Image (cartoon, rainbow, N blue to C red):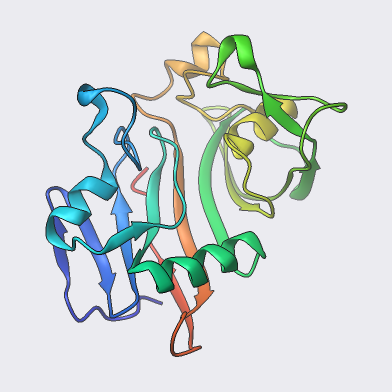
Length: 219
């Protein structure tokens, strides 16, 4: 369910789905950085736009530039500390929707493969059984389509950079529109990466109430 906001609205073209005394839930569009990159040309980002309206807003987690969906920010240092700890301790449930290349035969499963930065080709990541950090993704098929694609729901148990993208590529089903990990024919299958953060569930850092936020994918 959506939790009502006491201050709904938008910062730039960023939709603020929920605002209270401790946290902000933002709908991030694809193609926009979560935080500033290097150089003035990469200063525009979700955090900067939200801070124009709510200067005390602080980053808690990030989404890839190409990924859309629910992004959580904190209001003030103490809320940031508590929410960051919840992410680090895996007390935040996250779900994503994706459309991947090919038909996945099984209805559900998991990918448990360690990941590390492919340093000469950064920001690409890769599977590395020696140097990689543990990474676990659970997946479930939602539907299979005549276009030889599969819609899946994803649960990242860990939160490694590009985890969902690399894990799906590793099982032979890269995400459609993925310019880093999909073959050219599937890169061209969409004008954007078909990956969307569709749900967050967490304990409110001050009230202790469990909150659930959802935002269906537009694709």
